[in-house]
Amino acid sequence: MATKEEAQTETEEAAGQEGAEAAAPKRWFPFKLSLSRKMMMMVAGGVIALGALGGGGYYFFLDHHGATDVAAAPHVKPPVFVDMPEVLVNLSSSGGERTQYLKVKIALELPDEAVSAQIQPVMPRLLDTFQTYLRELRPNDLDGSAGLYRLKEELTRRVNASIAPNRINAVLFKEIVVQ
Image (cartoon, rainbow, N blue to C red):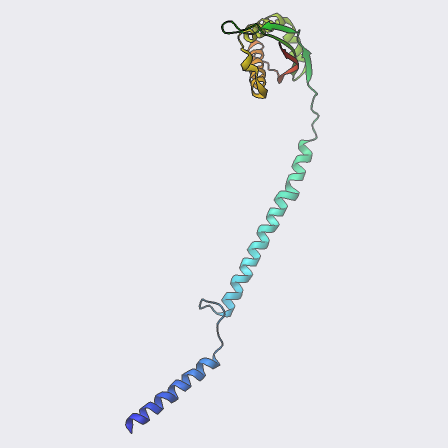
């Protein structure tokens, strides 16, 4: 009988343990944290998120508008354009190909009128530089927009080297004909 009594006490103890487990509330959070710590973590995360949103909003919407308004206030001088004489050269050909010609009308974009006064005396040198360079080009050097971009950059570099320390903004093509 001792075994029956022991079995009965074990069942009663098991039932008592089940009742105690049923009485305790089930945790919905996987970690062992008290309710006050959970609340503190959620409140701290919310405060940090609101602070980040507020700071980002101020930086992007309020802080930069004042800086761009002040930066836009100075008056920008319009550029000055100087037309160069028309240039007609024969392009370099290899072998027995027919001769092709390049006709170019160019305008120089200058930052101000003072640079124009410096360009006029050296205009014959600029024309000579342009003609020497353009005669060495082959027709396939001018193919597509990439070819014209390289030509524009090279002519700009040559003009800036001739009028240093002053600089021009760009070489602009008014007309380009390859025949």
